[in-house]
Length: 472
Image 1 (cartoon, one colour):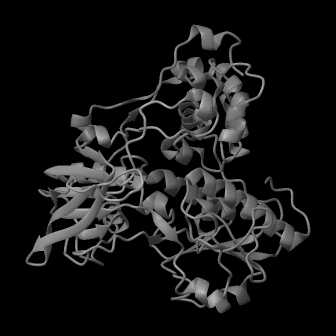
Image 2 (image 1 turned 135 degrees about the horizontal axis):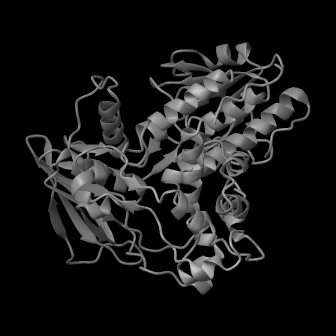
Image 3 (image 1 turned 90 degrees about the vertical axis):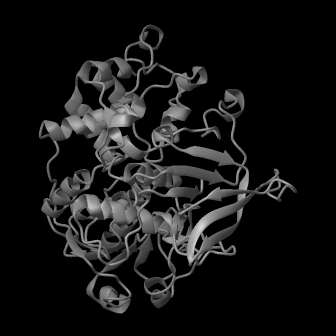
């Protein structure tokens, strides 16, 4: 905990954003840090609540009251060690995690939870600034060789833990750089990519070998990988997007969000984008179908590209602005959430179903919609049309891509089409093949991927060595 009476004396104050009129002109981060004293004051608000529900609210089980107390008392270096003991990449979660820990905070009963996410980000950013984060190579090598397939947050966390245990870790990534959705899905204005690059450099110094531009199952066979390694970990994510098979789906200008967002991220980084025709919102009426974080990212990117208008459609009814604490706390509540991108210039419409795309000369020009009731059935007489020169489908992902690597491995799938494995061993149905992250659990949060990567690493270490000192 922080100061005993801190929650009574100090009001909640969070990081602020730079003005929308300024930030939409670039793709850099725009969150304004609180500063050292501001962070210490907010850490002081962590109360002696008896049962720290934030521990369970956080998927990686961060020891939040401990490092809040350390920050309040100025022990930043010890707080950093504590934070890293449960989370390999707190600078990622400190920027893009929705903070379920704050929903679980006892002070959230009065709508003033401790700024856990802000404090977490401040701890790790200060650690980098002061040179406190260094490679941690193993003292001895085990002689065991592990292949990790996919360099998203689950793969990165798993690879780093295994390398620190002394294994020879080879991480295979089909793209030109590491990061998965962290790099190619999340826009730079939410998380700049140099944050990934410095972690990759740290991992390389710890012994992880990165193999870029290698699509396992296409460029190299799974049998070759299995023959060359003592264990294989599948962390390729859930990349199969949910489609909208309605009339006009084949018109030009109708794209998946993950066709649109990676292109802009590659433009910002200078990576080659010549592989496909450019998808741009410049001077267009944009309709984003899907009300989640990916849809929000499409909004912010479209606004920065100079869209004429941006409308986000969601088939679910509009959630309440405020949850019933006595019913939901300490669980994650369903309520209306307004992102920074929503504030930059967009319209949102709820309980809407898209029924047809119409166009001219092969290009989309409008979306025909209808309002739906609680049963998601169309309400007669509520049809309307929206102008649309660009439609972005951001309705989530259904499962991992089966064709190629997974089919060749012959692994079993669960009822949702994910690679079947439990959260104790993380073993797939194939000998010496493990899986973690979205490829195992389906689309989820970055913080859940980090958790699964860490836990899977321990299981792999136990499989190879008979026991493990890695944390679960």
